Structure formats: structure tokens, C-alpha cells
Amino acid sequence: MTALDVIKARVPDAAPVIGLVLGSGLGALADHVDGAVFIPYSDLPGFPHTTVSGHSGDLVFGQLGGVSVAMLRGRAHYYENGDAAAMRLPLETLQALGVKAMFLTNAAGSLLPDAGPGSPLLITDHINFSGANPLMGETSDKRFVAMENAYDPDLTALMRDTAAERGISLAEGTYMWFSGPVFETPAEIRMAGVMGAAAVGMSTVPEVILCRFLKLRVVALSLITNLAAGMGDTALSHEQTKSVAGDGAQTMETLVTGFLEHIAHGDVSL
Ligand code: HPA
Image (cartoon, rainbow, N blue to C red; front, side, top):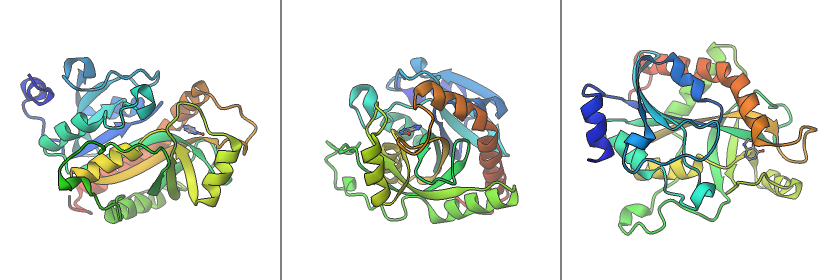
């Protein structure tokens, strides 16, 4: 049985059009899904065994903001076992179910002094600083993926409009992927700033690459949990990330749900 077979057997009428990846501390979004059906990753062959606390590891189907969604609650990270492609099968599975666009979320450190802990940040581009790529080993010519407009301009604009309409101040900029699992040094953060990064984190970029490989459209939001290393007074830790992300989950829920309501109204067709 493949993961797709398991899903079709358990949720025969699943017809998600948007997939979501819920990052560290952001899993509570699944509580707002209408008619939710949960399938643990452990029941889905090839889905990752997440080792990161704050990532529960299940796939959730249902309706959010009037849109049929599939939520990946918990992701695999490159730093867990050195596999940058660990999210390939989950993304391929969602694509096979009819998903057209992925809404990726994460917890991140900020290089923007005005976007401190609790601020949402719209990712408009990225820098892959990890040296890894989920398409290493792929042999088809499809591996030469163009990464201009990887963050879909129409979906990104819709996210900006949604935030404005809800009165939420939304920072934006380039997300720089560090492999982790350690946090960055202050010197690395100074370098990231010179290179144009607005935020840093340990995820998301491999998923964006895989999505573009699979021709899935992407919109991505960070929940800033801290000013990046050397910029703030708070000691960085995973506990701190989870706790601030949990506090910001309400803002993320407003943004994600508002965005999906616009999709339901056909403001951007997928
Ligand atoms: N760096 C990398 N990843 C993170 C950070 C950070 O400062 N905060 C939350 N995730």
C-alpha cells in the first residue's frame, strides 16, 4: 500500500486544493479545520518520522476558510538525518490528490529590528545557504528548475492584501536557509544581513524547491520567534521558539484563514 492508497481508503472524498505545512509551534491551526480527519504519518508509508518536538506528525484533511485543505502538521528537516528530500513523498502525494498550491509556514529568526518576536513575515525570496538540495540525485532534466518567482507573485500579493485588510502588519523579505540544528553565530547573522536576508531558519527552502519541481505554487509565511543571534537579549533555544510560535499562532491563523477565504471567493484562481 502506498501513502496515496491509505489516504484514498480512509478519506475517499478528499479533494484538497491547497496544502499547508505547519511549522514549529504552529500545529494548532489544525484545530480550526472543519470536518477534520487526521492520519498519523506513521500510517503513511514513506512519510517522515519527525524527531522534532513541537511537530506532531500527522496529515489533516478538511475545510479551512471555505477551502478544501490538506495539512502536513510537522515536517522533516534536513538536519534530522541529512536528507534534504525528506518531504518529497508527502508533497508528491498531495499533488496526486489534486493540490495546486502549498502554503508553507515556519518559525524563524529576524534580521529586521522592527519585526521582532511574534511578528509574521511574508517570504518573497530565499537564499539557499545550506549547500544541500533536495534534487541532488534526480536524473531527469526536470531537475533544472527555474527559481525566479518561486514564491508565487499573485499568491504573495493576496497574502499582503489579506494582512492589510485584517490590520496586521506584515514584514517581508528574503529567508536564508541554514542547515541547523544549531542556531547561527552572530558573525553568520552579520553575513546574512550583508547578503540581504530578512529572516533565517532551518526549513522551508527544500520544500519550495520540491514544490517548484512538482509545479506546485508556493506562498510562505514565517512567524518570527526571535531577533537573530547577536541582535537581541533573549537566549535562543527550541523551547523559546515553540513558546513564542504558540503565542503567535492566533495571528498566523487569522492570516492563513483570511487568505483561504479569498481563494474560496476566487480572488486568485489556482
Ligand atoms: N535561527 C534559525 N532558525 C530559527 C531561529 C533562528 O534564529 N528562530 C526560529 N527558528
